[in-house]
Length: 286
Image (cartoon, rainbow, N blue to C red):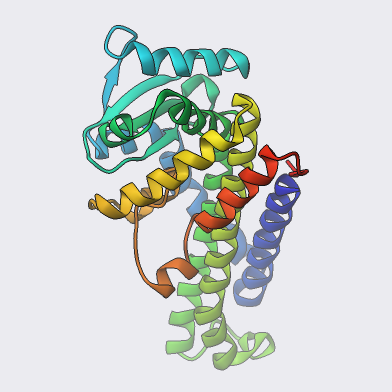
């Protein structure tokens, strides 16, 4: 179900781009915006692991550096038919973890020192199963594709903004809604693109919860870890680049209503509820 939802959301994002591009500059305007956004996001996607790991000063470790962590990841990777990812430690008290890399053969999994001190082996396995599911499902690629289309929409919205300021965008702009239409696109299109992009991110988190729990065979281990991590992030807030927030298993950004409305992560209570239902034999769609 989550996979279908992701597909439909991506389709909606694509249709939104096509409609806005046609409204503003026809097919040519849409293609120019898409190509420009694709170039920017391709570079980010290709070097995503290096960028993020460098940003958080992550230190790569081997089997002798942390036998417990290495063993958990190795066993889960083998069980899921994945290559062994590179492992990293981020020195921060905030308990969290993330996976990055453009495909399973170029993947990296990072955990913080805070999570290592907070969770036991069972709970840590639940978290790492979640992260390996992101790797297996190529969620970095999915996020990049969504960002590419959303980025193109933002570019077109900026074009609409300038077009409205200077009275239109060409001789036939009246047929496409005039200045008021351009202003509406400039304001509403980025909001719609953001909402769809965030919905895709939340859908992938639900999917990773489900697949990670199925991989370990212990949904309650992940549910227990999420409870601890949610409290731990609140108690140990750190400065995190908002662009990287979707990577973490628990949202490192804390805010009030507006922040939660535009969150990259599903509500924690709902994630835990689904895992508990899975543990008790309820059917959870994949």
